[in-house]
Image (cartoon, rainbow, N blue to C red; front, side, top):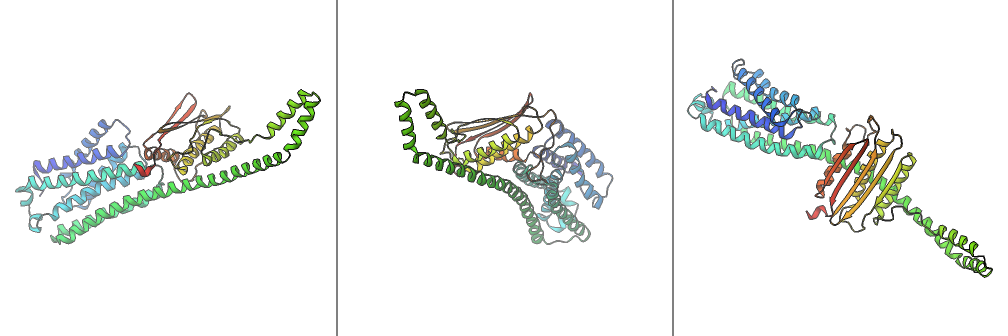
Length: 431
């Protein structure tokens, strides 16, 4: 039934679409161009072989034909295994849907007759190729966005559950296709409705994946905000205690003046100076981060400073932060929390450990940078949420940088790990 140059060319373009999509979505073991060429050559070679080995409508041909590109994508790319399988299955599903859509466009008599593929080969295979290009391009763009948004936020067990959905769809389409081949009957309206439902269901799956990642990120941010609340309580308690001390000192101010006046009248100048010096020390409020005008961030940083010092780490901070930034306090806390938590964990196994935190503001950009020592051999750090993969903090930081039209960078060099995030001072709602 299927033969001729048009059939071969349409399958070549299908394989081309698949592998270009894979190289856009996944990370590569080898250079992208070389990887794409190898994948196309291998897939096209096996397809040509299958054409002469398996019967046209055999179950083995159906599943092997769809399993092979998944295996090729799996081998040549370095993403998380179950993400590769899920994304590959979704790409393969687009081909199955395109093929069934093509069948639905023609009458039953034409579909089961070889005339459709001989007399009308160019339009039939052109429609099939165009449908493939449209659907694969759409899914590729969506999957690229989903990967960027969810990387590191979804555990393997969740990806496994996501795999079951497109796999079951693929099996359902095979069952329908086998029945069509056997009996040669279908209702066009019902068939199109089934395919539309499949596409909507795939879109719902992708939305669910993104929503799952967002919930995980919110869980992490919630933990940090709880940290912020506790640190603010400690900060304001400290301020209240300091204020009470100042009121008490002012209550006794007359006595202090009287004592100094007596010392000066007796000519005891040096004793008067020492008395004034001690009084001045009493009157000072021990508040760190004086250049940080944002009290919420200042209280949080004070708490983190205590944690760093308790861990035996030298902490050097120079934080200038205006009080009227449009960047939200929860986002700032999330940034400082992730950066400093990573720095503390890295420093725990090093000698002469040190963390240097710098924050600068030059309208309209805020730059937060941190440098910390690292051990000779990096050890597995304790995860905020144990079942999640490492690097989740960097995923959140990268997302925040995008949200505020900025950039996120990190670099390991000469035994020091440097992290920097630049944010534009805008409200995300104003973008």
